[in-house]
Length: 118
Length: 106
Image (cartoon, rainbow over the protein chains, first blue to last red):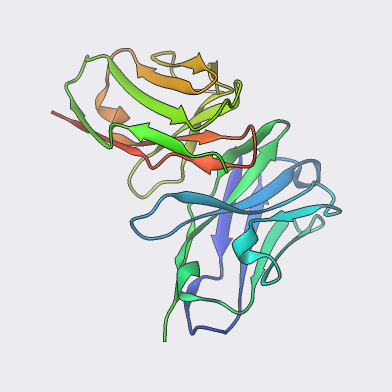
């Protein structure tokens, strides 16, 4: 069974940093691309970032470019999202997702809440 | 950027009803439209991918149709466990989600 478990969320002040982790199990992590998707309170879902199966390629939405870094450790089957210079508009539940072929998000984690507030 | 307009936002139906949810894209997205279900407190679950392909383990009462800009998710006979929020995703050019449809039992 595919399982994705996020951790590392919480309350953080504007301008500070936070790192999210996603522990994957139930599949061969190193064979799949991965992504982060977020949902702000009372708002829709939006894609944040994607990383290729081997970490060689990364893609970001414009609003997080230069501030967020997606990375992975295939030996630990873990996905990361380093978030710097956080803004109030980054407040959201962040979901870890798996990519399979042409399916951008075939399995999702339960999500982790990030609140950016002073 | 491609915009996705999902309707209705809320839907109330009875067990056994046929339910349809729609997504309209602001431009042609070919077949690259997926549907997801999210129950309260749970992770989103992929139901349908590429317009009409049923994801692994999804009951056959769920189906998808459409092409180009107009797409539909159909539940042929609503079951109590189908109470959830449903949303669409286009992945023809970038990724854009619909705003969601909250489905409840009447």
